Length: 273
Image (cartoon, rainbow, N blue to C red; front, side, top):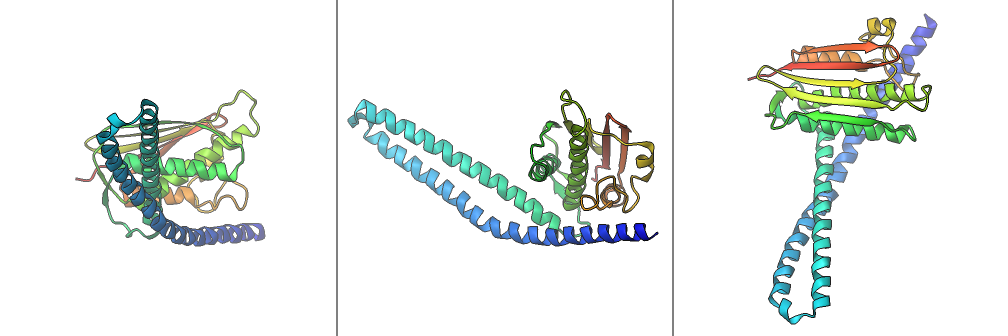
């Protein structure tokens, strides 16, 4: 009993640290967003100035030596490409920051028409980069399949984001754990599939990691149950995911797992009209 109480204390302490980290992340994200907006705006302004310069050069092009004209064209082409990349990656950074802010301070239980492909993709890769930052040398093949031209779907975006993040964290940890004991021939792989029809949204996340034993399957949704070392898992993630999918969205979460071979989770959410 004393050991269980101590374990609960440690897990609650980890949860409090995560909550504080969430608030800190929201503050950092808000502060980063402003300079990023300046980067994006000035890249677009510079692109407009470059277009004006092209027109001027075009008017005097016949007066320039051939070598100088070719150099100018090459330089302006490179500048255009660079400015386009700055704007593109700046917009992506802004999108990620807005997602973090949405998770941190989104209105509780508010259904919003959302781009599901965008949400899933961003949090797949946020989880991946977080894993890379914490486990040096970690790598994995990620296979993504997103239904094209998917309409906006009514979900609680900050909650769905949290569910995807937790599932991806577990999947990455599962393949990392297996890579520590498997032979050189083992190739960590994770697959993500998102599709919808007129009645439901389906998100499938599968891995070829350590899989689950029968005992783990039975306790999977119990609060404070975790297979991770103390300090690395709170044992609350799966229960939170089930609450998000089943209670808040009226959907269903199912899984299939073979110990030593891998796990697949399937989220199904009814499409609200």
